[in-house]
Length: 588
Image 1 (tube, rainbow, N blue to C red):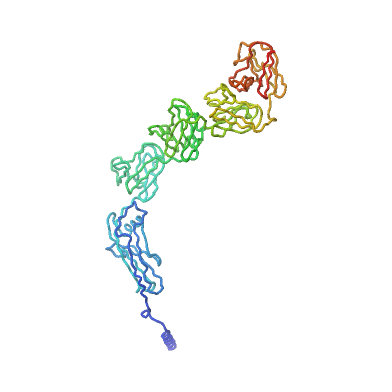
Image 2: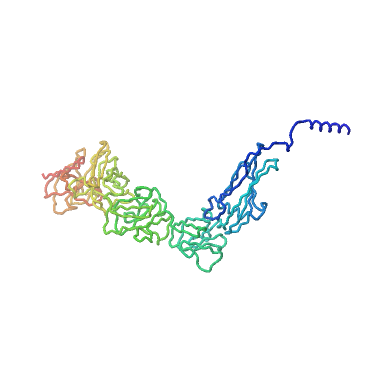
């Protein structure tokens, strides 16, 4: 015990011998930094419409560290002016923050949820910032400021659209765009809607006010119809603004695809499968230039698999040219065609403008919107069994490909659709290579003839009504002539009664014999030439005013033709040259 006391006294003595200074002796430096705080506004009226805007910012100056080179920490407190700070907000701000700000929505939540503010009442508040240095409570600094603010009662955080126009037994949650602003997009039918604050009860709700586009708040059933009316089925964009108590109901903007098709009896396509692709001029604007029949309908679709989605006539359009978009079938009272009301059929330019949802019809160029070349010259005995879509040029169309001996003509669609309407050789023209005007109904198969197999370019110019045939490369090994030809006369009009011609080689055939009857005509003549014992195809007279076509044969398949004729009975020699399609008839 005595030894312990000796050690204790020794330790105390040593401690007293260490040089140093006490807190009272420490030198503090007045840096001149005075802590102050200020508010960005002295009086604030909060509005829900400004929910995202800055409403209040508190800023303070750096506090003095008294030359200690120690960190200074800040604490912010806010309370009602007549209350103790312990009843309000306290927030540690750390050692670097010198400001804090609130949006309108954030400050309103602080005032109402933390500080107990009443909506609509201007109330005074105080804010104090405290600066402290760790372990030196004696150096604590404070600064205060005041501001006044009036809070608001916030709109519901969720809103539901409900009503028979929705076509659903359950209310649907709307999208919260901003505080108090809600949107919804979708299909509605004729009926009405209201906006409910809960999907479990009918009231409270927002419904129609005293004017169009004005909302009213109903805490309970008012006993009258306060729903918002929907006049037409369609795709809608709906906005409910609970801040301004307004609403908007408008048709949704129609989607603007890259491809649009036109279909309908007015352009000769009765189904969506035969719809014709329109020409995209710019975003949202599509055109179709072709033959249009008056008094018949047409519409626009986005694909060739269904009528929907589609663009149809707006039944409320005064001039019948307004456009409505439907993603699904809206029913027959809304599925309405556009119609060309002119008196005569003709080439028209139909423009669909999805930017202003309008259709226009005006006179167009005499050029079809599409063209296909077909015929047995393309390698198949049936003219339209293969699709040969031609390429658009400035004045018409062109096509390049392999062809064999035979004929060709044109139609606007592939064989899967129809061979008429079409464009054939104009038999009444002065030049052989003249294309006819558009022929709506089946007509004689007056095709243009290809004499030798090869690779060809075919050009159609609708401004001059001319056809140009250019042989790029000949394929002589593919030029095949018939092995047999038969003369069938009016006296025994049956291919099985045909008299065989002598094959002289290289497409040259000859017959000599008596022609006894020149009075009784069949198809305008006394004989025709058949390559088989079937009724078609047939070689017959070319119908043309072109003098270069005199003495030429035409090749026809299953169509009305004009047979060859002679003036009087007698003995004749007939020579046929398939390489040039010449026929020489000599009376012996």
